[in-house]
Image 1 (tube, rainbow, N blue to C red):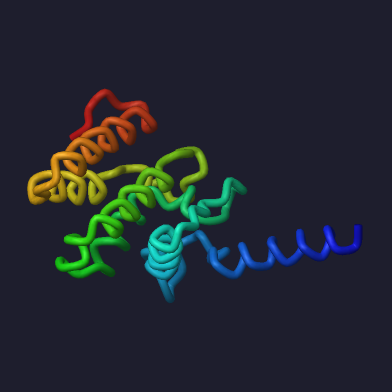
Image 2 (image 1 turned 180 degrees about the horizontal axis):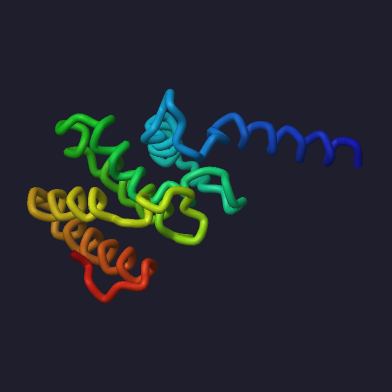
Length: 149
């Protein structure tokens, strides 16, 4: 019994360590770049932690996630399929619960749609193009819009 409690506590502490808890934009990191960077690194390593607790993780970033991706990653990094998959997952998670997005301007997916359209136009992989199109529709649906920009 004591071992189970210790194991659960260790798991919770490990999850807290790999997922930054400050989900609101801060002066030091207004685009949540560190949070997105950690999520991409964890996704590439096989961990998909977005946290469903309001106020934690990717779930309340909205448009800020795409801004962080564009600012942080180099053009060459988008040639790696794992990185592209990670970025698409991060964006999907960022819009999965629109009511939890903290800042009103992050509920408007302008930067996200620009990023996805650019990825769609430059990708040579038909599977990526299809995933991007589906993600654009998903975001529009999540935000109650029939337009996927």
